[in-house]
Length: 289
Image 1 (tube, helix red, strand yellow):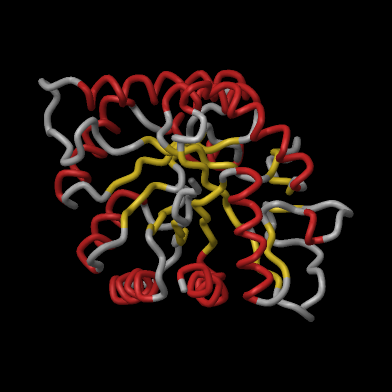
Image 2 (cartoon, rainbow, N blue to C red):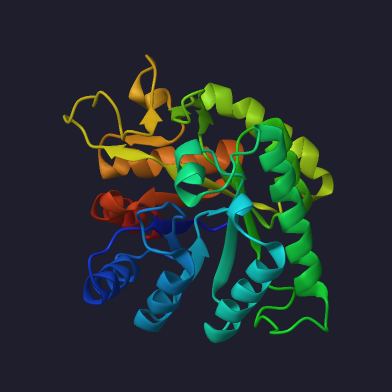
C-alpha cells in the first residue's frame, strides 16, 4: 500500500521575528506537514529557528534540512537535538548531510575534507546520535522514543549506504555535485538506478523507510525554461519534464506527476523551497481532495 503523501517546506531566510513567525504559519496554513530549516551560512541558524517555528505553529513537524554533519560535534549535536525534541513535544526530524560547499567550510574556518572523509564523518555522527538516543542514561531525554528520526540526504553510493544503515527517512537530492560544488540536476532515468541501489542496500527495510525528494522548482505552463535555477543548481540539455526534481505544467499535471513518482519509485515525501510555497499549495490540495 502506498504511503500517504507528506509535504515539506524548506524555509531559510527571514528579516525579523515577525516575518519568520508569519512564514511558518503560512506554510502550515497552506497544508504543509513539515517546516525544514537549511544549514547554510547567511541563513537562519537551524536550531533556534526550529524552536520559534514550533512556538508559532500547532501541528507541523520541524526538521534540519539538512545539517552539515562535519560542522558538528556528535555529542553536542545529540544534546541539541534531544533538547529541541523534548521542548517541542516530539516534533523533530533530524536531517543530516555530508556537506558539499567548500566555500562555507572556508568561511567557517573549518578544513574542507575529501568527499570520502565527509561521508565517513556523517556515518560516525549518525551512529553516535543513534547510540545516544538509545542510551537510557543519556540526558536530556528526547520526547520521541529512540529520539528524533534521522533524515539522511544524498545521492552517491557511499552516502546512500550511510542512509540505509541509519536513516528512517532518506532524502534524495535529485542532483549530483560537480567539481565547482554546484548541484547538477539528474533525470528520472538516472534516478531509477539510484533508487534501486538504495532499495538493495535497505534489504528487508525497503518499503518501510520513507523516501523524500527535493522539488527544486515548479515551472507552470507557459513560463518557459530558465537558464538556471539558482547559482548553485544547474541543469543540462534534457527537457524540464525529464528531471525528477522539477514539476512542470498545471497543478493537475504536477499532482499527476507526483502520483506517478509515488507509484513507480515509492517517493511520497516531497519538499519544496521557500519561493515555491504558494505554487505548491494547489497541488497539495488536489492530492488530498
